[in-house]
Image (cartoon, rainbow, N blue to C red; front, side, top):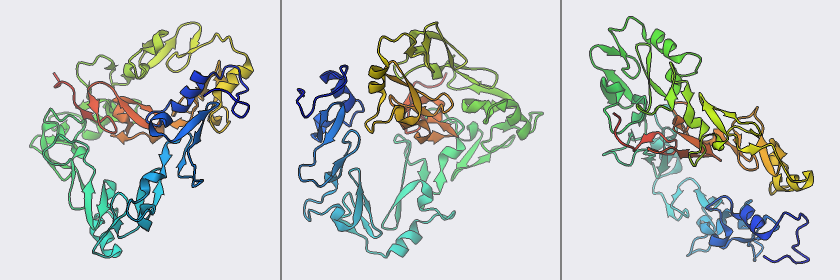
Length: 376
C-alpha cells in the first residue's frame, strides 16, 4: 500500500513489506485471503463498509458475517449469540446457525446430558437435544476412547502413555472398563503398573520414580518397581534416572537446537557468547536506535511487548519469571495449550500461542497420540 498523507508512517523502518508481515504473521488470519481488511502502517483496518462491526480482531480474524443465516438474514437465526464467527445457541436450539429446534424441553435436554458427577457430558462432549456427542481423540479406533451415554467413560485413564500401536491399556496387565483398570493376577496399581512381586509398595515405587518432579518419571516414562523407562523408547533426547531431561525442549518448531548458537544440557540451552534467550535466539549486538527498536516491539494496541517483557533490538524478550508467556509480542499464554497426564502438550510438543505443535510421530490436540513407527 503506497504511503499517503493519510496513511504515512512515522517510523523509517516501517517499509511496506515489513508492515504487511505484521498484518499477516498469524495464519490463517490473513486479510489478503479472507478479504477482511487492509494493512495500514502495520495495523489491520477491518472491512466494515456498512459500519456494523462484524469484522474485528487484531488481525481481522473474527468475521461474524459467518453467523448470518441465508434464509432469515439474522445472526444465528435470532436464537443464539455469535462470537468470532461461531454461533453459540440458546437452550433448545442447535445447528451451525441455531436453525434447528429440539422437540424436548431445555430442562429435559439438560437432564439427559448430565453425567453421574453432575457435569454436562462429563465435560468431554457436546449436548445436542439431549444426546451427548463425545470428543474422540483417536480417529483411528473402532470406537471412541471417550464413550458412554454422557461421555462418562474415558479409556485414556487406563493408559500411562498414549500408544495405539501397543497393548498399553492398563500397562498391558489388565482390562480397561469405562476408564478403570481391572488388573490381572500378579499386578496392582491404578494402571496395573506395579508387580506384586516387587518388594516396594505402589507408593514407594511411585516416590522413587518421581524424584524431584511432580509426576513419576517426570511424566515422560513408565514406572515399574521404582525404575523408569523413558518414552518414546529409542529416543535418546529423553533421559535421566527419572526421565527428568528432555532435550526436545531445546528445539524450536523447525528442529533447530538452541538456534544453532548454543548447546543443550538436560533440556536447557547454554548459549554461546553474544547470544541469549531460552533458545539462544537473541543476539546481544544491535544496530538500531532505541526508538527504532521500541517501534517494532509495540503490539497493535500500542503496548510494549504486551506489558509482559522487555524490548531488545526490535524483538520482545518475554519475562523469564513467567516462562509460560511467549509470542513475538509476549501476547501468548502457553497455559492455554491442551494438557494430557498433567503435562502441557503431553511433553511431546511445544506450545505455540495456545496451540500444541507436536514433534514428529505425535498427533492430537495435546500431542497425546502416537502415530509414528511402532515402538521397538
